[in-house]
Image (cartoon, rainbow, N blue to C red; front, side, top):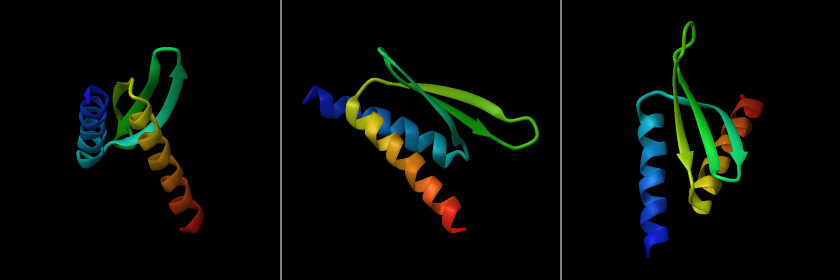
Length: 75
């Protein structure tokens, strides 16, 4: 049950940043999890980062990146 709670918290953090207008600028995988790099704005972007430890959260952010790429290819 703890894994599901961790996933929900990390997903809520990701969704919160996206709701504030941040976009996913990059991902860095390492043995400690995934570091999600977020940017807001164009000229001089405001940067943020978020460390994801839960495997399901890591999959969720990968799906968001993939979906964003599909939208760019279609548009």
